[in-house]
Amino acid sequence: MPWNIAQAKQHFSEMVKKAAEEPQLIYNRNQPVAAVIDAAEFARFEEWKKAQKKPRTLTEDLAELRQLLREEGFEEGLKIPPRADRPNAFVQMFRCWRRNTVSYLVDTNIIGELSRPAPDVRVVRWSEAVERYCLSAVTVEEV
Image (cartoon, one colour):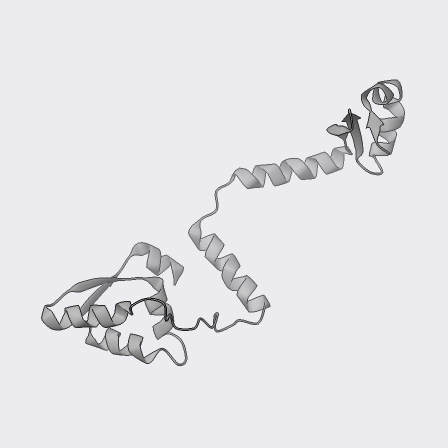
């Protein structure tokens, strides 16, 4: 039952008893201004609020994403079509490699592609052509 402020004051005991069954909203000029809720519900809210303050790590977020993908039937990852709207970075890197020896900082998408059952041929060729590449700590954690 919605209450206006005057009713809430006059029937405070009744409102508290009803709050044990469901939240009781208090309105001022048709705008909700407060809610009276059961103590157990408030305790659950406090736990949720406390959990929201704890920052999640990238590893935790990625683990949750992997779990969601598995639950949705994407055990082998998402099928992403090749890009056709801009130049292929792998081809450009391969051309640079031919000119001189370069070290590459490899991102997770390269490692992920190479670990697929049927990796993209261009990525395989590039990885075979690169003389030296490195992994960042973030990439290692993501993998």
